[in-house]
Length: 264
View: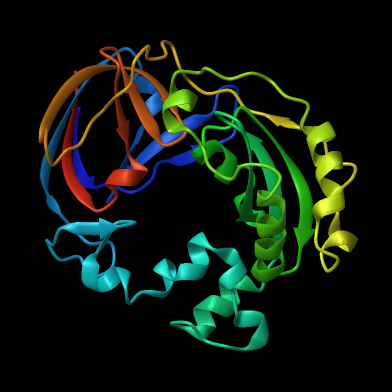
């Protein structure tokens, strides 16, 4: 089987285990079905997700020019507390910002390598947790806009982490935690504006990833340094492909790369 196209993050479907799909223009591949098969990945060129030009990817699948222009890469994406659509203030494109920011958002706890706090749109639950490789997660508050979620996350970050150790996550060096207890402990630190939105009855969501073999020592694949890679696929977790020789490939981190993919 041969496929070619520009990489975007894998689409997922909740299941036991989670189903992963790599989408190409006019075609797709269920990655679960190629576990234990040999994959050859060849880097062909770049293709910016905005302008489609063959320019080096800067961040998030965009070339440098587009990254500093498109509304989907505004600072408020990574820092929700900078959201201003609720004030009718534009960052790059107010219409787009209102569409995204002025909808229900969830502040949550996720356990991937450790317990962390995060923010996502309600419509992205549980997709966001899957993309982070979390094996368990729980909602803390559901607020009506991104700004409220952002200031809640900032307040809670003083008491719990907000980063994932991706290497630890991929080696599955994790332990189950009582997220209900953690959520209840953190309630006292939630900003006054967000307290009415506290979710006290939500229970943990548990996620199972399609992994046959976890790496013992992670080796990250960089297609710019290694334009052709061949290996047996042993698992998928977060947005990473895990290979038999301990190599891992971050699909989302390689958005905007055009590749040829062969399955044998």
